[in-house]
Image 1 (cartoon, rainbow, N blue to C red):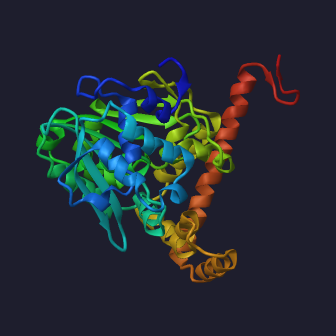
Image 2: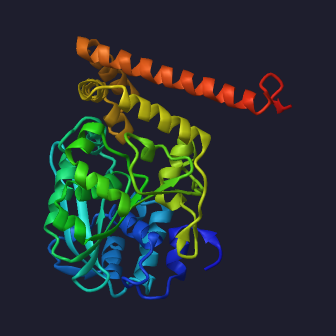
Length: 378
């Protein structure tokens, strides 16, 4: 396949049966994307072939109304695709509590002994988004991170590949970092697709496992990455991918690049790109914010954001705008002294980071002979 396209076009052209010898980064993203569909409805099935699971998803009454055209095409192509016809999915598990949303499955690519574990990202619920915010201060792991650790611990295969998109990418890296050396030795490769990082205290608590990520972790970010730039940067290989925002996602700006269907593919690999200036600025701001705030300050900031309804707003569950405004005002009125101090400190840190980057930008262009007033090089 010589054309530049996305994972759906890859599925249309993929003919060779998947084995451990030809498993690649695009396969990893396809499994990560498949994890977003409701496979937990079939947890009573011991094993099911990838095309058969896709066929069951197509039979859902809400299939055409709940999923975009790209997602419908994705499932239809999985049904037809010969590449995964022999690969079995098993250990389909999910967890839904008042504080946690998590799901994972295992795909056999070399019999029961060689598998890929895919973990789901944020499920667009208020609970799911609120849990994402808590990544900023949870030092021993969120509910999803702990569930990910237990799932990997209970995997009996001796060769394991891990993959996940967004929070799923955080979950698979966390599962590895939290595991003991015997389990980590079984992991061959980890593919993180624009998943957010971790807070410094969490990294310190799991330092041995976190340090080992450098040898096995592959981070894939769109050039304009926003989500993947949150919290501390991951070790390991970092690759930026050229992304083309699909119809309907333009209103999200560069946030639309977070969509797996935006990642451009050539052959059996992603089209490489460079990180945009906006993404670099965001990365620097977040790094400075994390570095210059304490765990307690991050806790109070997140507590405030949750109370004023930000996770609910992002998830689209806040209802009418009037309802959100009432909650926002009520939440602001109830702000505690510690929360106010944390918020002021956070805003001050962000402004200082922006000011410093602006000074560096001006100094760099003056050094290169750039006339700031005219906007041209001398």
